[in-house]
Amino acid sequence: MSTNVNARAATPDAAIEAKPMPKAPGSPARILPGAEWPTVLAAARRAAPEAFDADGGLLNLIGGAWGTPGTPRRVTSPVDGTDLGRLPMLDLAQASRAVTLAADEAAAWGKVDLDERRAKVAACCAELRTHRDLLTKLLVWEIAKPWALAQADVDRCLSGVEWYVAEIGGMVAGRRPLGLVSNIASWNYPLSVLMHAVLVQVLAGNASIAKTPTDGGGCALGVCFAVARRHGLPVSLVSGPGGPLSEALVRHPRIDALSFVGGRSNGRDIALRLVETSKRSMLEMEGINAYGVWEFSDWAGLAAQMRKGFEYGKQRCTAYPRFVVQRRLFPAFLDAYLGVLKGLRFGHPLLVRGDEASAPMLDFGPLINARKAEELRAMRAEAIGAGAVPIYEGTLDPTSVFPGQDVSAYVAPGALLGVPRSCELYFNEPFGPLDSIVVVDRLEELVAEMNVSNGSLVASVATDDPRIAARLREESRGFKFGHNKVRSRGDKAEVFGGRGLSWKGCFVGGELLVHAVTAGAAGEALFGNFPDSIRLPENP
View 1 (spheres, rainbow, N blue to C red):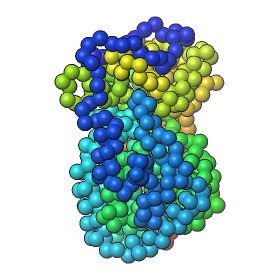
View 2: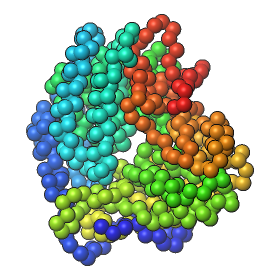
View 3: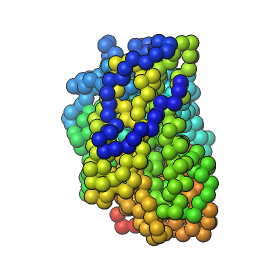
């Protein structure tokens, strides 16, 4: 497949629009054999028949039983608008009942011997590995992850949990489980973040209840939770609108701890709801992760990092959508940066031609839905209208999608220079392939522009001078800091958290994840970002 992002004159009127694509020449396009949605859904129903109703709709897992279809809500794929089925949306009363039944399981499970818990979780992971290909296909259809990234999401979940199975002994020594842990997470990493957290929570002796992300991932999670339940793990899975369900999953008196991954607006609301409670919490919220460039020369190395940064269309909490560049280096930076943008590949993640037997190698596919795509276009239009300079705008190659298919969720990569402070894009993470570039003259300016969101999960600087890197590490408001490298959430022993408004509550990763959902000696000081203090691990 040829490169499918093409530069064109970037003008305010040349918006990144979703339009029906003309028919393209060449071999007829088709879905990767064996990955057609009816085939994938049938395989999911064979793997977890208990999780679906007679029509293939996903059910809720409450009190160990699948059922309670609630009010069905239609779900379509961002890939091409394919109808994926229905989500079983619950109301507050139904969700509260689910919490009560989940909490009833916590006490008995907390008394189960650690070796038995290890054996059950290990067996669950082993069975899930037999469904690796199925889970990959489900993630491609449900959240539009390119094949390689979807497969990595499955692998990171399972290898991470297996690491905890091997290492947890010392982590829980002298500690006890909290009880019932509630999980509300965004759609972008349903396995490597949400399912991973759930399995570690039950491994540590807790019961766990999770909300199905409304925007995608329900079927993949349904298969995973069905397998976990078969192996005797006390897990529950519920679907529903955020408002009513968060009231049950956050404030219910039998919830002992809360894990949240999502945006700042929802995170702030949840933090306010927790003020009057004593619940343990881990609230991961967005921030603008910035990459500074100062006194630097390795442009090929930076270009490789920038290319990787576009994975999944920057729909990641650790993506870098903001570059802060020393003015005299801007021409060299722009040359490297535009080369990256022109080489990006995006399109339908399952489209093949001729005798191709594997999914296309893409940097990203569509955004999670048409609504998000429209929000990104609106942010871009506002910024340009206020004076930002569009320095790059990509276009969707018609050969990368099916003729006439729904492309309303597809957004080509773009970049803006000098976004005014009055614009939404200046202070907010775009969560899509739209970068902002800021040119500065003083190191103090660079620091200020990198810290614009009052806290972030990661931050990096490209510099040949280690003294500058050391200074910026000290002054950065990012939790993880990279010198000539990008940082990420990390796996296994690597810790994760945030500073400022990007995180509230306990940090996670490694033993911190287990400590966050267990209790030690009275008065213990956990690592985290709390209302009255922040306790940071060394060199996160």
